[in-house]
Length: 195
Image 1 (cartoon, one colour):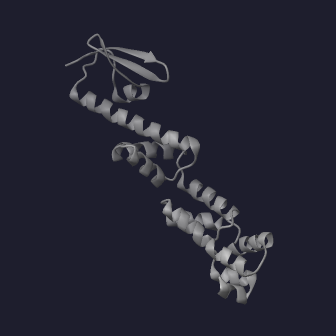
Image 2 (spheres, helix red, strand yellow; image 1 turned 45 degrees about the horizontal axis):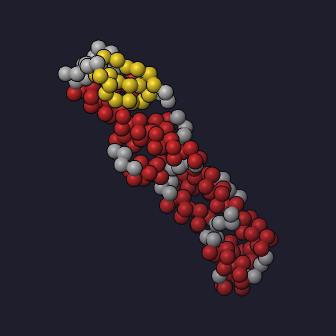
Image 3 (cartoon, helix red, strand yellow; image 1 turned 30 degrees about the vertical axis):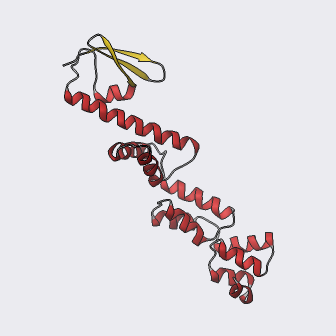
């Protein structure tokens, strides 16, 4: 069995592994530590498997953190991204669990932020609910995000004040997911039937 003869630190938190006096691989430092590699140890089957598992986990973490660098993602969104990049389900689940524990993946925060964004763009509760559920956000988190918004009636009134009342306003509110009862309350009965 090959023996680890050197572990050399390299830039960007990498370690060069030397086996039997010759270079073997350049791997993330945390994978070396978590796999239990040390100079003088044999690279037996169990250690090689542990290293492989840690390399898959490190790759999954890299893909996930790169995605999170640009915007918040829900758990399901990250799962889909990792699966699309060929990450194994076990490595993906471990990476997402670590990111959730660190507070970097938080479906409640994603739901709240997305609901606020859509509400500020003039969307009603139905459209917001649909969008959040499509993103894989759990029902109770969707309900909590909607509860944190101004009422749907207030948002509809604000939209009407900005853009005017009339049949076009009723159609616009309906197309943006506002409840027909809210549209009727805000615009009156004749326009609600028109939407």
